[in-house]
Length: 163
Image (cartoon, rainbow, N blue to C red; front, side):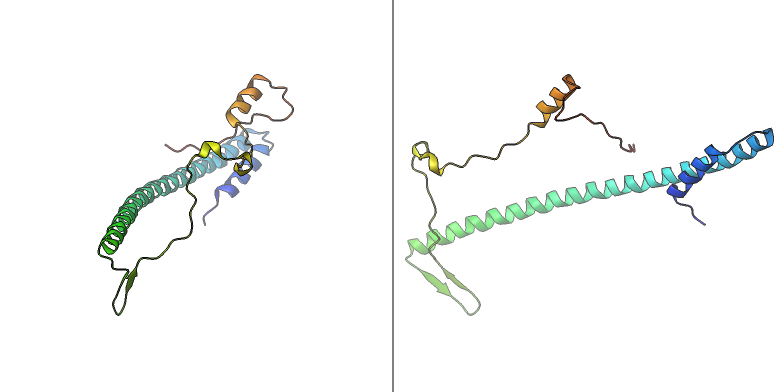
């Protein structure tokens, strides 16, 4: 029967709370704790292998994503160049449309777009101000220099490191 790491941790804590008064109790306690520590170590190592495998698979997926992104960008750029070429050719030959059974190619008007002639002369009413954001680095530096700061605090966490 497999015991979870969580259950092992509970058993370990229970063993540490036991009252050991005789040498026999001490020997029994050492045998139990030693076996449990070995099991915990094995479970931790096995979970570490699983995490390393997941990280490796993530790296592979990231590489595949990058390759697919590059491939997609290549296709998008090719499409854009071909559409510009097609538009120039159709306009140059005064061909507004071409049609077959399963496709129709035509030059269509696009929605009206805004083009800036002199952006510096725009009235203030057309400028949007960005929402204020917190400068987290500067604030952290301030909190570190002023530990009695009342509006923020620095906090360090813990993580599991697998090498």
